[in-house]
Image 1 (tube, one colour):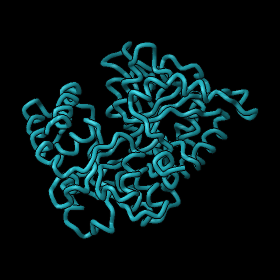
Image 2: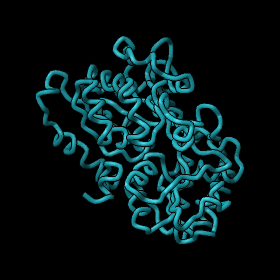
Image 3: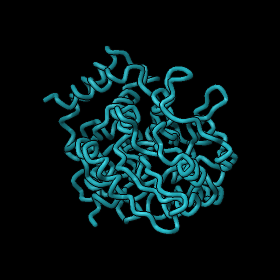
Image 4: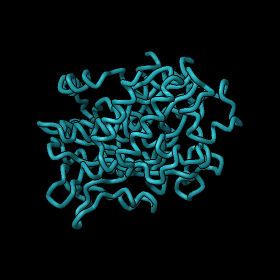
Length: 370
């Protein structure tokens, strides 16, 4: 298996391929083993590393459910699927809480696009740590979103090319400025790229940028496109580009860093002074879920002790439970980024933009500019 298809358990798929082949893909994963025959199958769409080789067996064993994964592209893609005509076609979905909540829960009661979660089926809710309780999606006494983990986005770089003591590693400037021109990769997602650029350019709340401010960000990004070797659309593509030495710097997520380091690549993540872009990953159950009981069982398993203890080593995300860093040394907590919880790591949450359509249009202009 090549790194591109294996590093984060994501195939190299275009959005068109994913959308066009979703039904066939799910149908093709319908085989069940006797161990899961009673509880059936749950189709899930989440960052695939959450169900990596050390984590999926725990989730399946604890939930007594067979889990079949879709190909995760981005949070934007996930909420788009939730609102697609005909329903989400998944039993369980997971994406950034702050970004997804306005779509998942709607503006007011009755506009929720997901089912309320029956907390009597989630006894492990008692394990949620204090910072992660901010990721509980609740309205009128009902819970619609349950925190799973914390992630953070930063700049990944090849330490053989970019020394750790380079001042550029202390800022988002590493992703934009001229020093490593021709060695940089940008993720082809409007939300994260514009948030990162907005933070770097000094916007205190970049998700609230108006059209004039977005135009200034677009002007800046267009001026820096000359430094970019390539855009990538999946985490696997970005990881593959780093591993093959085609790029030495890119926008990246914690699971990318984790997997590449475990495979022996000399890749690490920057801790920009403007703050890493943080997110609480939250799970929710679409209204067209076909296995509601099974979806609850998987949510419960993923905030249980066994899965929580294995999560960070398994994929790089920080568990939303009290078990996640319980047995870690101070050095391990620092390396993995658990300083998000105590304030020792500066971070800014990836909030949903005030006008997402304007952001998408702005990013399209950046990409199409000569």
